[in-house]
Image 1: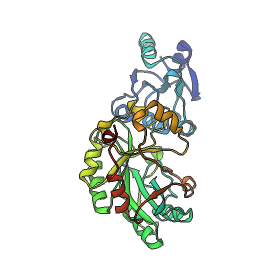
Image 2 (image 1 turned 180 degrees about the vertical axis):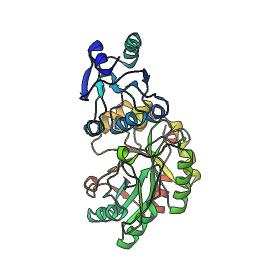
Image 3 (image 1 turned 90 degrees about the horizontal axis):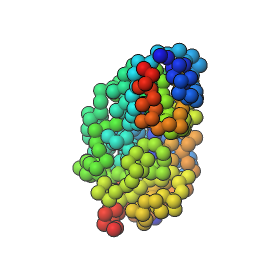
Length: 108
Length: 244
């Protein structure tokens, strides 16, 4: 399962990311960045409502497969720029993190 | 006497702070804009404050050593001290409570420690944007133990604020003032959080770039423009729980 499949299966909006062929190995939910940084695993889909520039940094450090902004949480302009520079895939959905995690667990 | 203030600014030591925000540039820009008193409040550190104070002394503007502390709940709190020794003791304490995650300058930006003449004299290796181990319920007490005062930063923002992260501000947190951005809808916030009614509001720039430092606009009434006068003023404000 890669990010491209995830986008197609769940109808996610792509806010940032050109190459979506990144393999997904798991999923992590969390909004406290310090917490996520030390606990999310490489290859996770990270579900969060935090769309600021530090979220992008955390995504790079933790090497997650992508960020999914749940409940249509907004992505800051600065964060988008940083994500483009660092090839971080950012997706968006109107579902909440529970609904999204439940849907992902059926796919992976 | 009324003095123009800005108690929340960042230098190049903050990972998100522009490298042009050297202590020299920051303090001189503040002076040009007509400010009388500023505080340098980098994320989780006071290591550029001594240099900024020296610049301030040479051009006649007061620089308060301060910090924008990130609590364990990722709530930002402006902390101010009346002398550099207390600020540095607090700074060392905060850094010792942070997880041993190293900064990655290419992602978060550099964390430069500079002298008063724009020379780089060191770098902070730990990533300063991370949460400290100090919780919101302990922050007032802890800062007081180091001789300082504190208030929650930009409570109208949607991230890193006490209201965005915890949903409310409560009297047992021990605050006596709050910070709002100049764009805040004060009336709406006070309606939603009646505890804020009558609580003094500081409006600071939270500048990370030289061009974000604001013109002198907000004033504070003090007997003189020393750091001590500011700290005493905030210390003497009634706590939120005393207002109820």
